[in-house]
Amino acid sequence: MASEKVETVIAGNYVEMERESDVKTSAKSKLSTFLWHGGSAYDAWFSSASNQVAQVLLTLPYSFSQLGLLSGILFQLFYGLMGSWTAYLISLLYVEYRTRKEREKVDFRNHVIQWFEVLDGLLGKHWRNVGLFFNCTFLLFGSVIQLIACASNIYYINDNLDKRTWTYIFGACCATTVFIPSFHNYRIWSFLGLIMTTYTAWYLTIASLIHGQVEGVKHSGPSTMVLYFTGATNILYTFGGHAVTVEIMHAMWKPQKFKLIYLMATLYVLTLTLPSASAVYWAFGDNLLTHSNALAMLPKTRFRDTAVVLMLIHQFITFGFACTPLYFVWEKFIQMHETKSMVKRALARLPVVIPIWFLAIIFPFFGPINSTVGSLLVSFTVYIIPALAHMVTFASASARENAVEKPPSFLGGWAGSYTMNIFVVVWVLIVGFGFGGWASMLNFINQVNTFGLFTKCYQCPPHKA
Image (cartoon, rainbow, N blue to C red):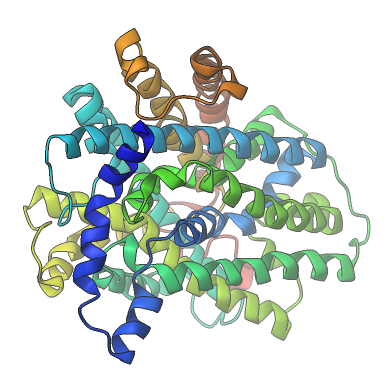
């Protein structure tokens, strides 16, 4: 009975919002609602899956060449489950925070709740500041990576321009995401994005199998500790896409239904990443060590060009996913978040895009930058901080007794939950941040020494550099 009451409290504001939006019943309004206004569990699943498997799909074969086939598969399964667990923790903390606030009659209809606000409300300003730093820095570089990926991919269709010039062009294109109000409005984009990555994943798989193994192919991974942990942290990054979990939940009509959505999204993503990475690595082996973008290995055909175009569109969508929370933070900082004029909000958001554009031009290292961001930022943002926050929030007996959502009994209840949280913190701190940070920074520094900052055409053929 209590849980039903909580559900009514949590869903209340969204029900009111939908009723207000139902005044117009014209065909045009209905079409707009169908394409534009998403708040169901299905919308959240599409958003989670689409956001998780963006450009990183193209770098996983590169990671397999660093890790070897067996380790590559095991790390994907392991970090997929770990990421699903910490996304579940974030969802519990969001529901706890929102329920407490709505019992105090706080109205969120013109306010998007974010992760740092959850930490502030449950644990205080110091947690808020740490969460805000890691979350914003990760999303900043996540947006940078999408921009780098756009330039890297389009080059395989049109190499008349170098990758840096393409970065200028796509930076301007991606700036148009300032006009998308919130995750509530990503319904059609999330759906299309997942179709696009599904096509690309199966194109990589089938094209590699048809191509067959290159002459003299070798599969020597793992060859060094640096390469091994660099590859592992790219996979840590792959399944760390839940930095936007709170914003996706807030866009739902019933956020408490999110609990298993990220796990379901991860299971689907694994059906794309495991076959494609394995097939490309089988066909090209150690050649991938110097080609971080899997598309570079396959011959130019209309199917490859289609994959490139679809990934470009999807990277635009994922840029919006990563950047929208940054837009919200900036809006709140300059006190424009509750402004109803979307034009004013869009103009206010534009300064957020400028540093992203600049960083993408400085560090165009598609592939290695993923591992660096994974070890230094993702490790804390979506693994260590959520696990620690969950343990501290429910440290007292009264907090556990009055928790809106309690851990399921089949996982061992509170004792099982704390055991898993401690394991996540220790593992990611030592393996992800420690060894991963060491390896990825060495690899990143090697890229800087080899190609230089502001390089015009990273990993291009010599005559194009």
